[in-house]
Length: 191
Image (cartoon, rainbow, N blue to C red; front, side, top):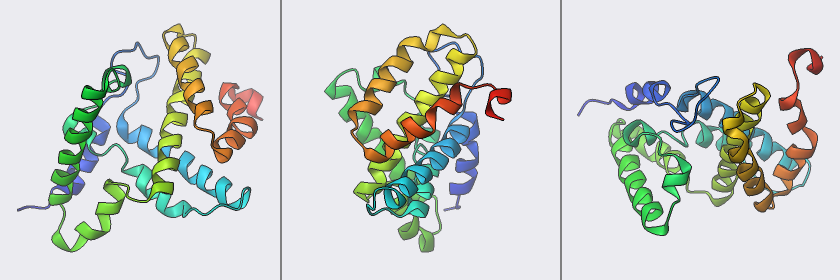
């Protein structure tokens, strides 16, 4: 079998996010994954440097880069649908597991063991930090859309902000207090 993994990964730019919403600026899963990696890395560093808790910031960043890779095969299912009820959520998790296995099968055999914990995110701390960064990235997208005058994201911003608060993660709370305000500012205000 040919090793198509990297060719598939390059197609992350073709999968659009926020399909049910009118966007002032479209976002694809490649752009999103980059931002999630930046945020996950920051959260892991805050976790270790500010709170003295264990985390491998580099491993967290790499896992975040690939956290939506299965969507190359499944597409991006909107959150309200994905979590509408337990049956849909559980079925989607099974689809994601099959997609993970399919992606891993596209790698050279010698690399599969290295990618499996990344694609499937096996470490619980890494999984938690990537999930928080993923939600944080969604919130930043909402804030940026609202800043551009797109009220379509008002309710999503409120729901996502509430979900972030309910995570009860000190590193996330630290980021919200110390870094989040900047995303509401204009370029001139950032100087």
